[in-house]
Length: 399
Image (cartoon, rainbow, N blue to C red; front, side, top):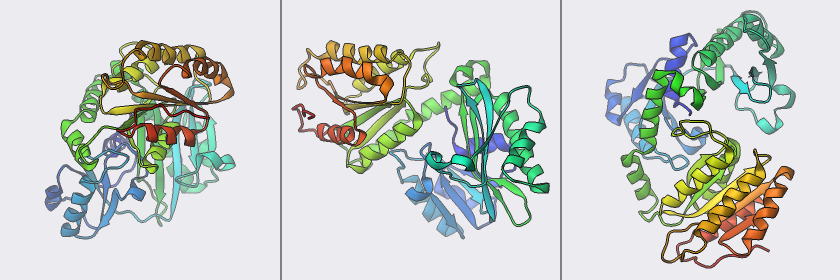
């Protein structure tokens, strides 16, 4: 479960991480009562990334400009999501920007401190630019200073950055988090640091241990199901929701890439679900197969979903069992008449040597079902977009 930026900034400020003066904006007219000085940065509060490129971040100099910009941002969908609130924040002039994070490494079951002297790093080519320190024992300021030194920082700046890392780790432990990220941590001409943007991912299994998190989770769940936003999105999509493509995947990065590809080909991506972690509604631990089965049924229940695109990359726990879940889903629905019942097409993309067993099992099902099995992601997305057209009732055979 991720928080919106304004919520993250509230947590940062309460624990001592430096943040700018800001104000939550629920309606454009709230800017008439703005308590911070211009120039101001208006930011769309959505879970999707790349807000700047999408036009969701605007710098304004006056109240009139701010209200006009806010009206535009409130009606600007970013990856299909409309903001319910905006964040107005004082503009900050930085001379340098860093990347910092505290993340749970599930491979070693230890927290890891990450740092880079470049913000917005390309993860695929980060290489030696990204420094890390594994917290192997009880945390002490030594770990934070070690990260700052590995980043090549010295003097007062080294101390300021290490102090921020200490606070990030404190928040990480206090709230049972999976990730605390500052991107960027800006440095001004006076070598003062400021968290300009942040991300927090809550471990969903820890929600029950923190009453305040349970209350927050309920609000977020309500927000996702908000009828007002759903109606706005329907209007923006032309009113006709037939032909949407539901997306299931095993990683946030692969889901984002799939979503983007579907949209770029003119498709209507919807309901992206990351099966790597349990859902907010899960009250007990679940297996990957359980989450896959639940995801398939949730998307099938939505009559606007014409195609379910499953993109599994790398490795998954019990790959053969996951393939059996898909096969059973197909068998349970194969006898239905597509014209009389809402049964979405399945486009499945499997990439990774560990998924060969699953691919072989599904290949035997493919010839007798509404299943398209593709290894190349671009081809899988293209097939999904073709099948999602309302007039398409005939199965497309992949060569």
